[in-house]
Length: 292
Image (cartoon, rainbow, N blue to C red; front, top):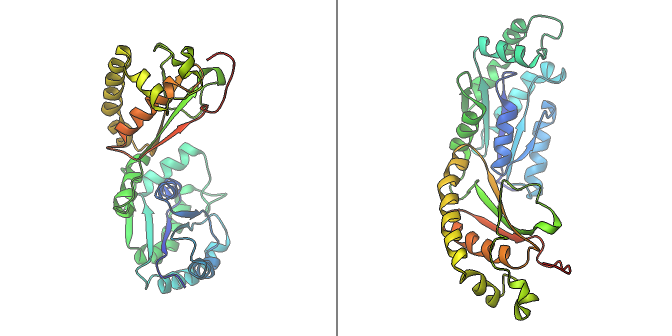
């Protein structure tokens, strides 16, 4: 039995933001399940604790299944039993009726409790049905005035562990001859720098080898570029983080992805690593073609 598992049950009014909340928990490292049948909650929780392999679980329970209606009161009792442990918490998302109606109108979806009727009638029925669950919740978030980004921030504020850094940087080198990285957010071309490939003693080395690294860095153009590019990144990264971006992929490219881009990726990655978690990869470092 694993007593360290954290369980978060996400529920609330249809249209109040449960999908956004689940995505936020995924970004916080939770194992997430959407639309779990409420009758399986207790059994699922037992299995999770017994396996001991999952430490954080977030489960969305809502009204998308008809069975939910009949099982609500039994589910509330089951959750109350689970909730006696500090490791289980209920998050209930709410919004005022006018906002919920407006959101349904925008998406042109029907309410799960009013498939053939008025949305407002479904909302009223849902409020009555979910009242016991809302009362049992440790955290009730009213999303009436919250944008999706603000809701994410609210989730992060309440559940982010102090030792977890959700924003991180993927920094890669690559060769233009092998194509642009399709997942890059920022691409920088360093083919304007002198190329070590044309020096016989450096041709078969790479930017992680000290002779190549030193050659690239001693060029006057390199130092000027490095200082300006690093300054640009340091000034913009806080903005990406503030806007809720969890990772940023920065790609630095040269012709073959083995000399100039590798050396600069190493230096810039190490510099940014003083402030952020950084993972450095060299996509094309082991590839060889005739020209570089």
